[in-house]
Length: 64
Image (cartoon, rainbow, N blue to C red; front, side, top):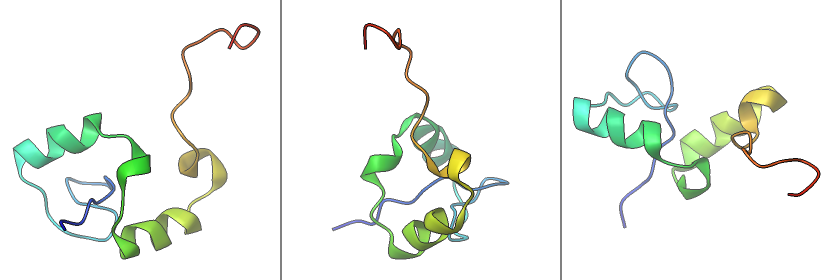
């Protein structure tokens, strides 16, 4: 099974692997819940809470 990484900075994954242009565009669209790389998950847990949380929802907070 292939490891799914989390996007880091400077065209690299959070655990330090370099990315091609295609991989970079795919990771920008991917949701963080699919990440299964142990090193990326460990580093994600060390991040401050706002960066660690899910993307902001677009729905109305009253209606869900």
